[in-house]
Length: 63
Picture (cartoon, rainbow, N blue to C red):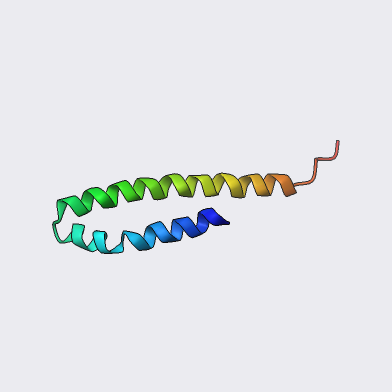
């Protein structure tokens, strides 16, 4: 799943900025917040795809 690899990459990329933001760097804090929003959106896409996969595998209900 490509999205999962992208998610891991985004998390890894913000590591330095997280520590800078904790140290008081306001610009780094802004970058972290933007990256976190991107991570949130990508995680939501992954959730939807996983749910779609699960629904596709569910057999039709017997009537």
